Length: 109
Image (cartoon, rainbow, N blue to C red; front, side, top):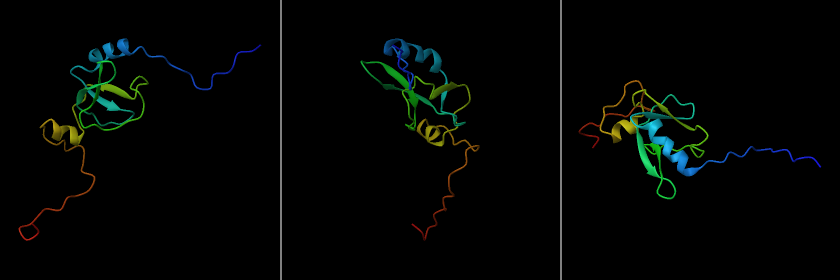
């Protein structure tokens, strides 16, 4: 009798060990989501059973469980405009606005 062909490989992750590795990777670092060049500030969020994991401070979403490398540490400075605003830092001019915001005039208020 032959073995079934595994169509989708299953990777088992030990939650305690995985969560314990994260501070070593992300303490003092920023993070990238996927292949994006944008660097996000890191916050620690509740996961399961009292464990915490790193996440973008701006709460930018992504798909995955972090264990597949969807979030990676970086030493680059924060370039996410929302993370910069949330942390009180100045906006990074390297990341342009999505669209120009018209200036308000006294008559336009």
